[in-house]
Image (cartoon, rainbow, N blue to C red):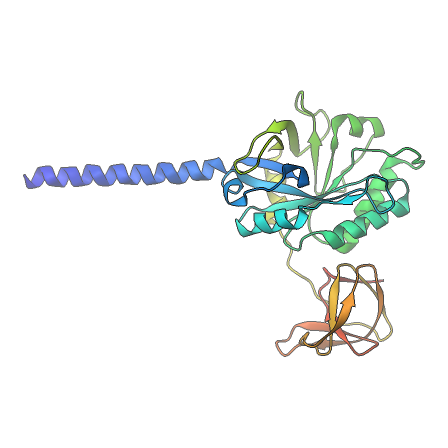
Length: 302
């Protein structure tokens, strides 16, 4: 009798262990999809989507101010906050329509300013050449890349269609990777992430969604796992010009207390000295006596 009871307990314990392992493995395996999303996906249930997604790439904007179809994605913050809340690593992308080098530079600056601080990487969506653009598309791509690289150390990814890359002979080797769309077959141009369908499905998302799969898994994984640490200015020269790269506040003290106002991205300010908070964090004192962050993700030398 005792032997039978012991055997039953052993069997029951074994089944419970197998069940737990199966559930855990299934839950892990389910997080395999990579989707890019925008306002067109409507209200995403990130609690559900996070169980299906390995990673997501979120649109920030379409075009640049002055473009006839320019728009800031209405769901960029909601989607970024939802993905972050439920533990889904995400990058953000910028749908561009370059018409000059200056346009590409300004586009990158606005995109960065509007992006979410928790984004692991940034992607250039380069798939539409506007009528009237006279320069080489590669020149515009390089201008966007160089501007973004001056603003951030995070990975930069190039996205386009296979046909567009081939037509304009785009070289994306400067980027930390490439993400190429081709729905009929695997791309024949260099790619690390392949957008293979626009008719995918993800839990928590109504309707169809673009899905991608890795070609170079190691490279893609680095996009969202190798997040650089924040860097701070530890010295500035009196009179040095600085460019604000994201909207920030300015304050009465180095502890960033007593807000005196706001500074919009692209504003040029004059530094007076470096300072430190009571906790030792570096701040920049401006010529008007106010203090701002010394975090290089928000400020750059002009």
